[in-house]
Length: 151
Image 1 (cartoon, rainbow, N blue to C red):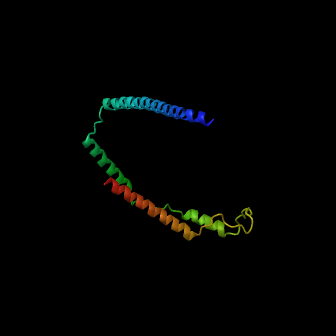
Image 2 (image 1 turned 120 degrees about the vertical axis):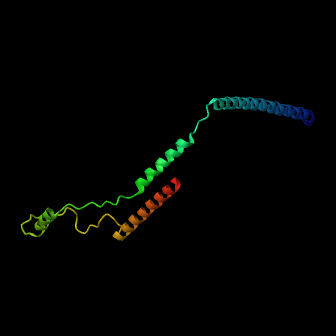
Image 3 (image 1 turned 180 degrees about the horizontal axis):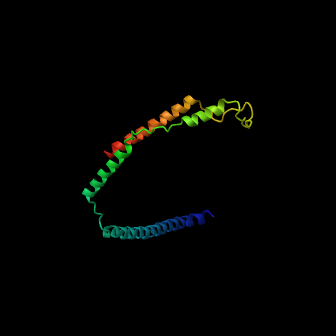
């Protein structure tokens, strides 16, 4: 058995080496075909891109549009200083006050909420005011950034 293995071993090693060489050549051919296919697609894409007309940009029109946009944004950002006048509400105020303090007003229906229930909101008025303040500051920063970008 040892003699047989001694004679078969070189043949097996040679067979393995040849098989590896064939696989290597087959892989190289396959990769060459794939690379050629990719190169053909790239060439076709380049031709399509080169055949496309270059976009023309009229700088004076662009500058005019930008100036128009700036004036529009400035007009939007300028807060109107017109104060609305309150309509006279003395008649409505008197009616409401009379209804509240006269003893003849009908009693409203009993409240439907259970006694001792808390309000849904867990925030205090101070927290709500702080949140409103932060939101206003954030909006002011955004407006300033937009204004800076447009200049």
